[in-house]
Length: 148
Image 1: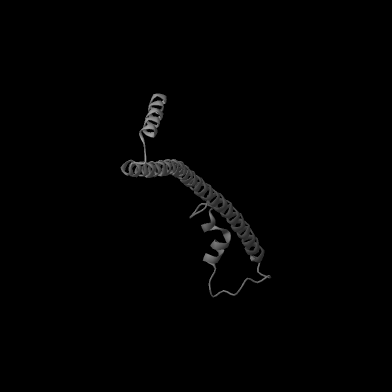
Image 2: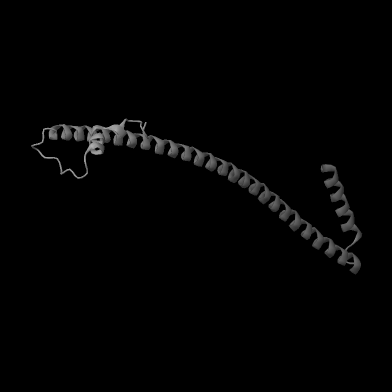
């Protein structure tokens, strides 16, 4: 992991040297006997920082990957719920369409029956429609009633 004190980076040799170095002191001199020690300490510090950076990057990749996985699962659940709703609405729409078509056919038939009855009434009233036609219609109606 990373964070305060997780790597011991707060007390690295470079930071210890920097903390103890006098700010008025000139830059390290290659002739100074401690020059090699300071360079080695800085190299070790840079290696430590590189490892820390790589660990932090790996951790970040894992965290982002987890978050992406969680978001994808959440999105998949949401999509599945929407698909169920759409499917249900489609089914309801198909049922309503069938019902509408059946009602429309029934209405058309009723309008045709009404027009036929009005025509027959007009024929009765005019005396054009006779007894033999009425008897034939009555027989047909009786057959229809028995068949139903």
